[in-house]
Length: 226
Image (cartoon, rainbow, N blue to C red; front, top):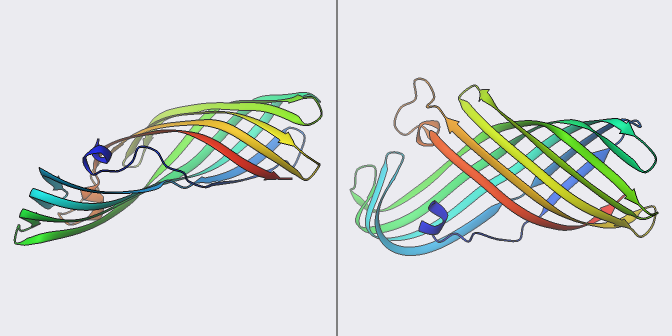
């Protein structure tokens, strides 16, 4: 639970972007990007091991964490009626983890404990994918209500991934061109990352090997251009 240890807030306001294209009555393609960037500063007394760096004593740390999500979804409507659509979907995507840590310590800092400061910047891209179902209903002339649920588990290269995602949204259109939307989104990802074969100390992939459990809940409010 490093965000509490490093003074990173558990909530923040972040932008998200999405684009949807319906080439036919039954098919839909959408892309989306959720920004998740947070930072924290904290002074505390502890002992930390980050890759091949050791930091202990009275620590003053500044940390930046990024875990942006990108996704691509293909949807096929098995039921495509005037008032509602429902079907199956395939989602592909990636999580872009980036960890920046700058700290000073009165005990020891760095790979050789020879200095009082350390600066660490590590990143890794985790591929994701999911299978699921979706539905959307038209309530009156201007209101729409919909939702998705999807998940998958499996191993891709060095990544053993378990994913569950869900969302519920409502949309209101002021005209044929403009509308507003509100939605609740849940994302839960657990990744076991094997060490890269032949990796050595100081290798960024080696230092980010292990298990990452990542989940967030978000409320989205936005504007729709059609």
